[in-house]
Length: 395
Image 1: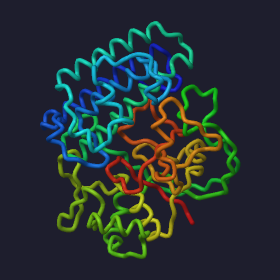
Image 2: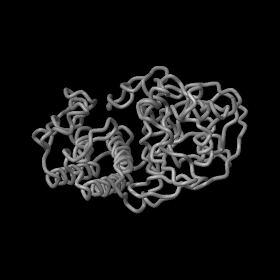
Image 3: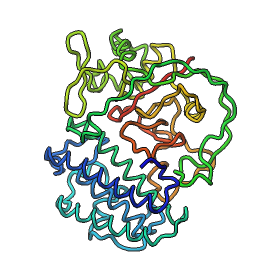
């Protein structure tokens, strides 16, 4: 389904919603096969939800915005009740603190799958009677984007828990593109999205002029071989390369190499979805925190791109520029654009402003319909569980 969800027609949305749900259920079954469909069997980690809670929450989100016609995350905006008697008490992320999601008395796996199917059937039926206009299709596009994003989170969890992934995800090798440096002349760009581009996330609003000075950027991401040179040079033991926050993160985790790297004699191996493999030297380095990206740049005499530079480059059409293997750290804190106002999903962007870092691009686990050079992802600096890497710019 090679189209953008932002401008998808009602027929395209219908097919994509079913496709997204099939992926969600396939990923959930990977957890279930390991006995992790029971919350009590799932370790409590800060960036992971119990898979059964995640499954119910995804369906609840679609029910909230599409079937219950909520105009915001505020419970007072919802027009009707949930199909589940205690649906809001279980699955409203605004009401249910993260740590408490492991102790909820949720319905059985079978009951929640039935709920998922019932919500989907009703959403598709309602979509078939909905005007093919942007405003009318907004909640459906929102629900689709949300399920695609939560699907990637489920895929990340498989890696975190060393669980075998579906074949199309677990056995995919990332392309090893030759790296070069591209010089961009700079200029004034329209940063953000315009009103006539279909669905727009609130953190992309609205397009505004931004001057970008000339800069030089790597054509692709830092590779395992390049990052390995930093590791082998004792980069993790040299405090001068690390920020204060980075040094604290290093000490807390007792790190001497990236997540999932394993030294085997004179070579590096890595864990990929429960299996150990030789680290491919030319692949982009993945599962790196912002602190690790910053330390590498200090060691290499480079820097991370700004968010504006990344968008400028991605939209330049330069034939040598490659992106889409992994999410990419920028050096820009995640902040609102001028005139920001939250959309219906109020818990999306606003709570992350100033505490998170702007992340751009897409990963191999990001659905094609979700990818856009305008998409603003955001993460806490310490996160290394994501499919994330970085590229550098000249100082």
